[in-house]
Length: 200
Image (cartoon, rainbow, N blue to C red; front, top):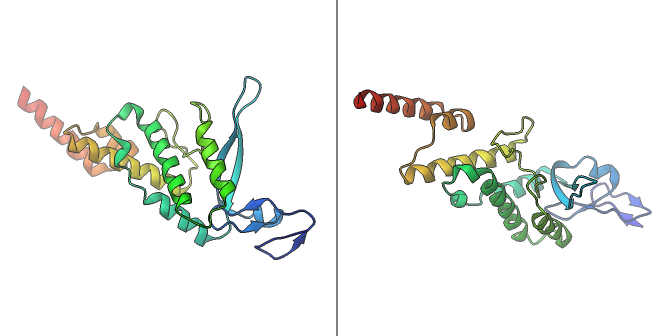
C-alpha cells in the first residue's frame, strides 16, 4: 500500500509521481492536476521511433514558483555573442539553470535529478533534452508558457548586452521581432539612416 502525500488516500500500489521541487508523492488522480510540467527526454530516438519523453510536475504554486525563481536567477552572461549559435547556447544554459536549481534544493528527489542529467546526455539536434520553447531558427513556440518565455527573453537581453559591450549591436529586426524592444529598434534604424546620409 502507498499513501498519496497530496490528498492522503491509500492505494494498492505505491504512486510513482513526485513533485520536482519538494518530492511529495502523488496518486494518479492528484498527479493529473500537477501545476506546470517539465517534459524530459528519457529515451533516444531510433530509425523506427521518435525519442521518448516523461512529464514531471509541481504539486503547488509555491513549489513551481520556487523552482522557476531559481532557474531565472541563473546568470546568462555565458550566452556569448554568437548569434548563429544562440539557440543551442540558450538550451545549454537552460539545462544548466535547471540542474543548478535542482542541485541546490535538498528536497529534490535524486531520481528526478538523475532523469534530468540523463536527458542532457541523450540530447540530439532533433530531440531536445528539455524543450525550452524556441525552434532552431529562433522562432518562439506560440503556446509557450510564461517561465520559459521569460527565460528566452532574458537570454536575448543578455545577448544584446554582450554584443553592445563588444561594439556589435544586433540588427534592428532582432530588437523588434525577438525582444519587442521597439524603441531600441527605432533608435538603431535612425542611427543607420544618419550613417548612410553622412556617407553620401
